[in-house]
Length: 464
Image (cartoon, helix red, strand yellow):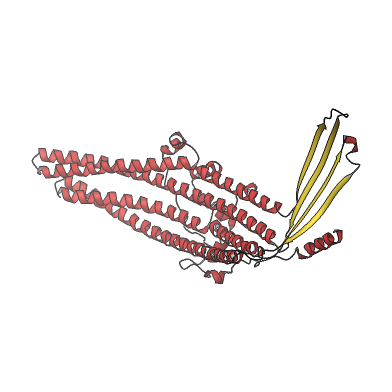
């Protein structure tokens, strides 16, 4: 028996390096369909440092402070950290299968006999079991668990980038709403003055009551728009509060003092499409998921081959504690098992896992193409916002001059109220349009850097 056991151990050690299933290699850019350049940009180089804190390019200290709070207190990020810890513990559990399990036991008893002297009995024992990883199935399961843990890390990074982008978006929208409310209130003051002028001209018999009613209707519409803007503004503030892990209300009180719409820089770096494989955490998570599913092919394939189990035990018993080491007994046993017939179940599991790996590859490729789509859409949004800002600046200048002339001419009785009404409406539209275009420039920057995968590069190493 001893010779057989030694021979079995030798076979186990010799076969330990044999791993079932394919060795994983990450797909290349050509396989994933990644172009050399973005269609709408030359691809200026961009560093991890620029991506890591991209929001600082907006030059808004209040926004910087809010984002730092969100990184530390957001509850979605906290949940993602918990999932990462859970995945890492699963890796520890998988690794434990590579080692023997040992159980110890101890006992004590007292025998009573009316015809003899009472006696005590003590026992000590230990049992060990080890499944030898003959064909690498356990090693592949550890490989899969490691890839799953890495995917969870990148999932955490994805949540972080999404929260940063969402907070920045709501901040810009809040500042835009503040600007639009100010424009509407200023316009309301002018329209109140127009209403007073129209009423005076009606009383003087210079015009019909139609002018006064038109002025009253215009003023009421502007007043109604202020209520809608204030509702949107409050919703943005409430969302910001939740994103930084606090209740709506007092948390965003400092923002109510007002502030300018963040200004996007004139030039933006994008890098090249190949960078998305490294920068986008969701893409990297999909790649790690592909690696895990590929490793599980080996796990399934190893079930087709024999399994080797080595067990052993050691024990002793004595009538006193001091004599427990006098006689020690034990044994070592090796067993080899092989499935002879299972109706094709295990072969089917291998095929099913190959299909799962193919699906993971398709999901990975889709995540790459989606990332490229996001960047191209963001680049288009940047160009569109810049063009509209330039044109609305021209429209505002012309509308301001037109409204000024129309107001003075109406007061002098040289034009009708409808002309003034049209000029005032054009001015309000131009002011709103320019504010929206400026906000859209900032939002396009947020969209672009979110698409590029910015915001996680300096993530705390303790979570990695």
